[in-house]
Image (cartoon, rainbow over all chains, first blue to last red; front, side, top):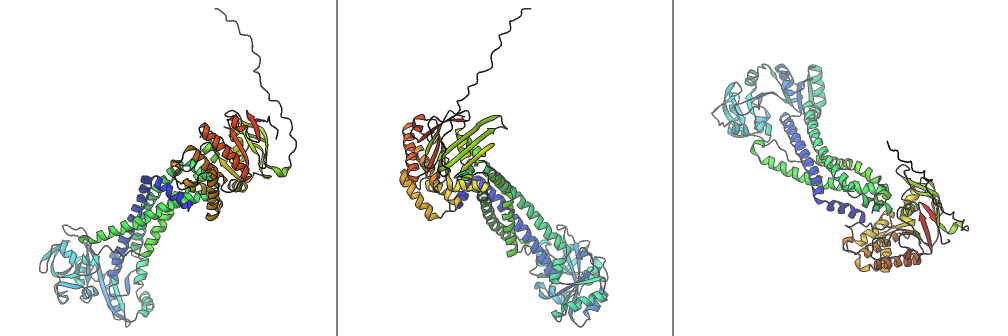
Length: 370
Length: 253
């Protein structure tokens, strides 16, 4: 009890300093949580595009980015004919720009693609898709920022297209995208006879291993991965996640330096008090525990505050129309756990030197000059 | 050119040598609770020698006053006896156990020795009760036992009504009595007091000093106290004079 009181008392003694320290950790945690959650949401959305009504994705082996993947139409035809395949949908990804928007994702798809089947058609009809080579369907958000309605023409890249429908999907990328007939997209992106990926739905999910074996045997240049497998192994996702954690980690490091500074000041300004505790029989371990206890308390309060700030910030981001669908506020428990553990570790690391210094305080020197 | 006559050479400075202390009669080891044998201590890499081969003993239940001018080594000797510092040379033993290991020093501070300083050295943000309980926390003593002991000590020192007061609210005398309670919380057999009345006015000083002697007597504690006040010191069982880091003991053990 007295031990805890000593910890609380010291933090309350220098309230402003403690608050600044807690704020340092809180903002670091909030930044880390926001960055990691947004990027994981983005990764989830991208995975969602690929796994729309499918379990397996087939793409070119050893490509760093799916935009560079080249899957020949012949492979699509062959695979679609395999008895264990329910349907095989080729998708060609492309990036274009319009006057105000430097990046718009284009999806070259067939009429039977799950994206069109599962979307809510706000205007237009799926049966009109692919009837005209220059007809495109816009996601709801794309229609907003391109100021387009059905029947209007929209300038995308170096071409002009007729808007034949507007759809609403739960996926932010798709909602801000342009859907072209596959052949039109192949012509537009100069990729005749090829697609970026094939999304596969099997008649029986348990045939996944057999399907992968067949792809490997028949198409050595292609690779088939189950959705989860792909999310785990795709290098772009790995880079994104690593970057998110690295940026968040840097933020936390700065917060840790704040804690270290606070704890150093805290120890320096109460050498005499530490000397009194030592004269009263406090061991090195007890002195160090007190210092680590203070920093852990700062870290825990900072982490909880940071989680609340971060969550609030994510909710605010979600309300911004331009970010609709991009921000997934469903914060993973594992992310929360990792953030709290990292904050605690940072706090403890920040208290290492102050604790060592406090352990070395010699009461006789600290109390000599009364 | 006028030559100034060279002054006559002076004799070497006169060095006062202390008369050697006659050997005291041997005291049985069992009753000696504190012993310093040929203890030397210097600071600043030997530039300032504070203790020059001090030999000192205190027997169980005795009250000993260390008197002497400032800088004669009283506080240093107390610190060494209490295990707060280490001698450059010589041996310190408490209850026949030599202080050469960390563990024994920690045990010493927790269970065998209590310190009272000139400035009370209490933690100002804590209450009287919390300050007094600190040694019991260090020693892992149960809260109920600690509170019972605190009740007894604060009753003896007239502080029962001040238990929940912060240190800032206490008078100088009350603070020093609180420091005394804290020093005695873990039932130490030895109480080392460094100018315990040095920061108090004459009346309060006399009261606190009497309290020290009374409690030392009733608790059976060996009290070694450094003081400038010769009048107070003469009320102890034994008065030890220190001068230039050496002991002169006019009163026999």
